[in-house]
Image 1 (cartoon, rainbow, N blue to C red):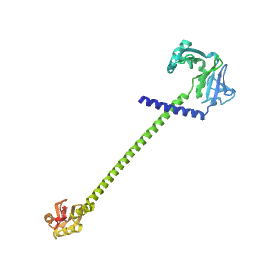
Image 2 (cartoon, one colour):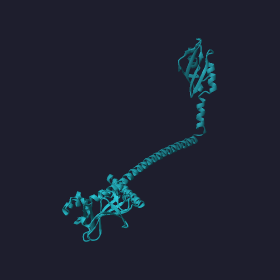
Image 3 (cartoon, rainbow, N blue to C red):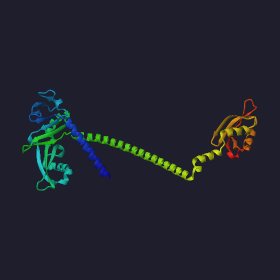
Image 4 (tube, rainbow, N blue to C red):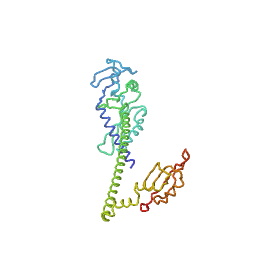
Length: 345
């Protein structure tokens, strides 16, 4: 499965690179020139007009002084004499062996020519056999490197976009051997860039989809929670209607209120319970818990007095009792729970 995904990814990136390269070549058309190698190296335009002479030392001379500037980055065909081309046919090979054809030809170059494979430029041409569709005919064209070394050394500094060796064949056709095709390097560089861009875009899409799915799941959880709360409320209301008006939430609130003292009753109970020598400076009531702070001359009498009133239970000091600066009274801090309302006298 991983190999299939990798193959699909490579095929997709390769297709994008081919399309981008074709569009770039269509938008930006390069000039084409022919360098004819004879007694001297003559440069001709695509129309056949002679532009100048290219020195084998790499300096452009002739009728056009800016010849080197015109040839830089262009498509160049180096036309060599016909005897320089060594063209031979090999035994037919199976169609399934096409991926290994280059290695097969390189192995046979020394057998069909006086040179080694590393010392020649060559091109492989295949054609189907009419009587045997499972095999293809193989033909190879060879040109020795030493024959064109001086010309190519003069052309290399010009960095042509595409460089081919062309020679007239015995049947009158032109046989071309690409040797300086920079489109492959351009293709590989463009493929790397497109691959990185596609990988970054894929990563962004995956992260965005992950965030969207997480947000959708969060919204679904919230909706489910709201549906659950609504169902609970409906069940509570239905049960309240079945129980009747005396058992509804209002009745329960009234019953709870009846068991807790009101604030006025609480203040009245404190005023009746605290001794005359004690007065309050702070009072806090939270639910059924009361905190009071104040000043008294006899702090030890406060706890028994509050507990005996039955309005307050669990009376205790929640902070240390301190002596005032003049020394005639103490500052106290008491905490207690409120007793049930029915227990109040």
